[in-house]
Amino acid sequence: MKNIVTYTGLIIIVLIFTLAYKVDHLPPKIIKQPTSEYKDKQPATVVVNPIEVKKDLYEKLKSGSSINYLVLGDSIGESDGADNENERWFLGLTKKLHDAYKADVLHEINGTPGGGAFGGWIDYLTLEKNKSGYDMVILCFGQNDQSSVELEMYQANYEALVRKIKTDYPQAEIVTLVESSLSKEPFVDTIKAISSHYGLLNVDTRAAFRASGKPYHTLTNDGTHPNSEGYKYYTQSIFDAIESKVHSSVITVLPPKLLYPKATLFKSGQRITNWENLQGFELTPEGGIIGKAGASAELSFTGNLLGIEKWADVTGGAYEVYVDGKLINTSDNHAPFRVNWENLLSHNLGPGKHKAMIKVPDEITPNAIINIPSMITN
Image (cartoon, rainbow, N blue to C red; front, side, top):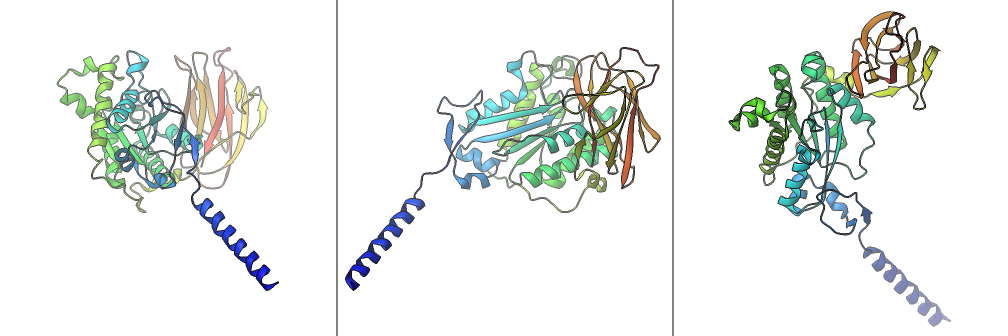
């Protein structure tokens, strides 16, 4: 009987070691990846080593690993002005990285014509992000901000956005573009100061335009947006900057100290649609409101800043925004093309609960349409 028990025990031990060996030698996890214009023709699955997740952009490039990058920007970020869609600057960058490092390079573009840093900030916070994360994020803001936003708020928005990205993706490189059309030096200085403070990769495309020796007007199609020839300098400048760091770069950790104290205003943010007391406005299927002359709607919120998301097009008209009974902004949603804009209305409301009201004056064009998907607060 004792021999039988001993023999049975030996069998159990052998089985345990066999199972342990098989579990320890399971094949690596296979995950599906999206395709790219410049991805090698191969099966749509790649073997992902868990260690790869901890590599930064430059380590992945050197090893030929898959790269995901995100562009957050305005119309220049979208390559508006290129003579055809195949000559957009980010397509050129994706191809150059693929050709140079034999890596699968995938890009995502989140841009808004006429957009600025405030819109980029809330878009990033509410964006459905790639589940694989990002190895690089390219920021392209300033051209529109320089004529429509207080410098202090631009500084705070930009820094808060950088800090959030570095918190979410500490291994990612952040590329900060100085757009070729950016003319106000305080905005340029802001981008460069933030880049220096956080160890980011700054690319000044104005310098690339000057170094080309070509007249500025020959590199743009309207004095602001580059043409295809101009966008080639964007592609090459960003690629050269990345190349310069491949063999020597270390992604810097997030410093605890803020460069601009008011960046704390934008530490968090949300879109809100808890509309109430609708008079003349109707709710859209997405939760926004749409109305005409004489319409009004209210919304309660807690926070010390307020922004607005609006659809603008040729049918847009004027409206007023009140907070706690006080007029804080008079604006409109008229534009020559259809676009979704986000604008900061006030940043000094004080903490606590507030009530906002959107009011459309009776005297605006009768057929003008006010379309507001959401309000924004912190």
